[in-house]
Image 1 (cartoon, helix red, strand yellow):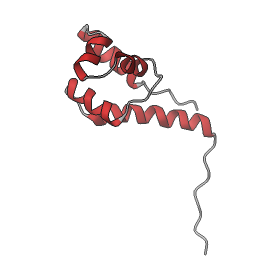
Image 2 (cartoon, helix red, strand yellow):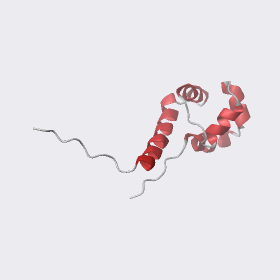
Image 3 (tube, helix red, strand yellow):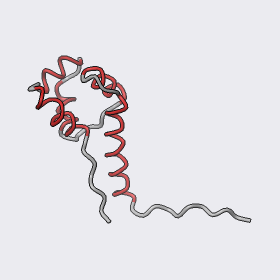
Image 4 (cartoon, rainbow, N blue to C red):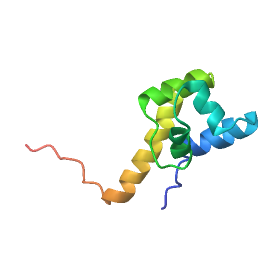
Length: 95
């Protein structure tokens, strides 16, 4: 059974925050004190949301850093599952 790919932090940032607020990537970058390239790379899934970026986004949008990090973690785990293939079986207790 195929697992649905989680929504990326960049999609969330763009679709749930920037577009409804009619805010540009440049305006967000200026507001949180980073280069617009960083915001663009997050939106285009070229870079991950780091802990410090999660803190900045959480403060800017009145949510938590955990919100952003959990979205990133979901993507990271999804990609890792695709990459490594079948997982090992649980270790059985030896008597």
